[in-house]
Length: 200
Image (cartoon, rainbow, N blue to C red; front, side, top):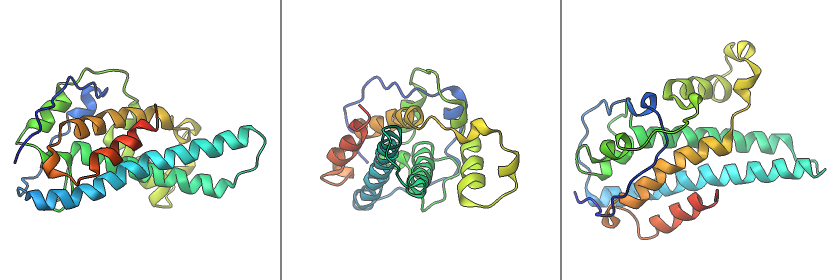
């Protein structure tokens, strides 16, 4: 399986608590055909993550300018964003991945993707992006009706969406920059980069 020769100094911005999670299960090597087909869903995930954030921000701006956007629409967009954020984190880290899960490491020679992540320079990574915390939050606040909601402090309901998405976007951009073109669909790089550029 080829690896693109466009390796750059990747500044993914996460601390040791995030990158320490191992790829836990042995995985079958996927064919180039399978990876190309799977990349359509990866591109769609990136588009939904950044697209839902874009529309959330647009509704927030409309509210501040005196308009009265539907709170249900904003909540639906926020829920979409949170679910795609978890998908993106799982794709990037591959923690506890099942054999049929699509993860970034599948697209590279053994250990290369992990080296990209571990070689990044740590910055101020949002504490809530610890994967266990993220999963617990999404399960309790979005996926299930749980009593944990009534005990959660108010600050946990005010997530810095732009900051969080920007940090995750750095890892996704590292994937786009380094994946071999023959392993992704013809329009993958354009679609993914357009979504990533929407925050700039």
